[in-house]
Amino acid sequence: MLPPTAVEQFPPFDCGAQDKGRSGFAREGCFVGPGTEFRALQVWPYATVRGGTQAQGQAAQQRVRRTVLQTATSFRFHFGRLADGRWRLLFMDLRVPCSA
Image (tube, rainbow, N blue to C red; front, side, top):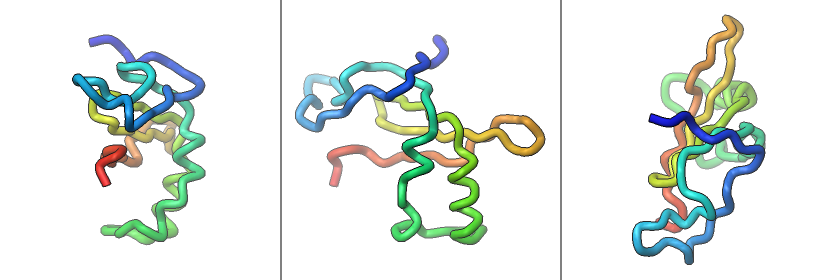
């Protein structure tokens, strides 16, 4: 298995480009990039929190440093480095674009 391709910006997405097995992303594959976009995302007014508080979720969101995008599924996995120095998966974004 190949490691994700490092990028500074994820490939753009276009709903109209989803056809004949194409994901809709300008490039296909697995990419790793900065978690900046996810840290700025305002999900908390729409989120259901289980096993913690909204404040804890927001604090964890601000610890995200890297995001992995898998274009075949459109899933994004958000990672952060905790106080012990180890990388942890903090959030999984399993939303599928254009499915609403």
